[in-house]
Image (cartoon, rainbow, N blue to C red; front, side, top):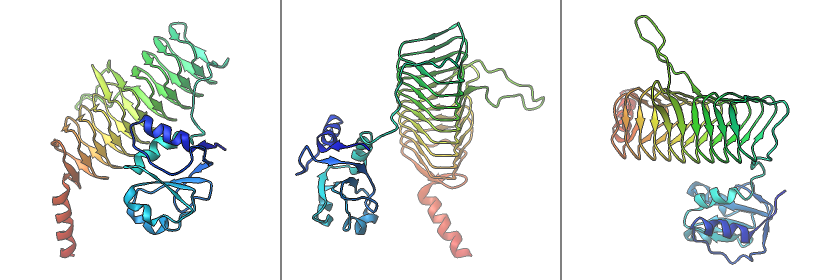
Length: 328
């Protein structure tokens, strides 16, 4: 069990430019980070959703990350830790309580197969039954789990975490990325001539920007000639299909079971809900939100919020839903 002092909590928030205020002693200790309803006297909690206001009035935690306008709802047993954005504060503080933080121990298992035409820098951990193929470079601080296949033609940059049963080929993974179990990155895409079904040879690669996360059993296909791109600080959920030549911008959030067809270009700060499908050769602008289960068949301008099939402005889609409900 971790014991985290308020001094550490305050420190990590201020380090990330978050203003924080509380009457707590810096020596005060917390054992866990819990939800409002499940917290107890030694826990830290957070309040970021008005629907849980009644639960807030009965909170048992020692302290709560909270906006100043809501502190009057806290019982006397719970100290407010006042921040402007409690959920963002939670994101940073949660790392202090993380018992599963994976870091390389610098040990390479004797059961690992490493091609002589590969380069592995210092402090790299590679677990049992992983294969490192030719023309592969793995930089310092990287962790690779068991039963994975890395290469050929791969560069893994510093401090990347690759979980078990991952395959990566023809790819560049930038620093501080996390690749979760079962991901398949850099394989040949779904490309062929329609009449004869003759396969098209893929010679491109995949590039994943720094600080990005790729979910379990997600597939990212290599480009035909150039690169399939995932931008920096992007979070791709489990069971996502990203086809060849797709270009995803920075700070993307893509939920589970999304499918993106080939050669579509997606801007920065895009959010895509679960089970949405996006056709090929489209251009989707910056700051776009695509609701879950939407079917996108046309280009989308910057800052749009769309839903439905075929996907359209969410206000129009809601009006159609209302009209159709009256027809019934």
